[in-house]
Length: 102
Image 1 (tube, rainbow, N blue to C red):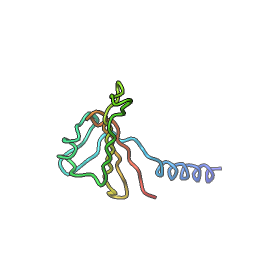
Image 2: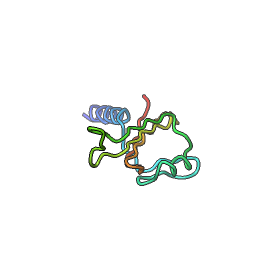
Image 3: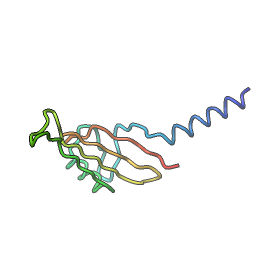
Image 4: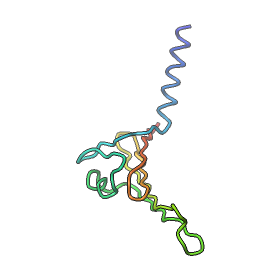
């Protein structure tokens, strides 16, 4: 019975490693990034991302939709077998994940 439980635990660990995990802070050359950092602060700490996509606020009939904000999606890496997607809403970092490569 113990061998089956151990195999299940190993399988669970492998499954979790392949899933994106939330990250609170990312270590860079010049410090840690955190939620609430501006894109300028992240650039200063981490340099340019590997990719950067900017989504402008949505418009309807030539007018901004109320509550619509600019969204930026950045990706750092791969570094040490991982990628770090970041998301900024209205100029503030709100989200970061850790994606491990298999």
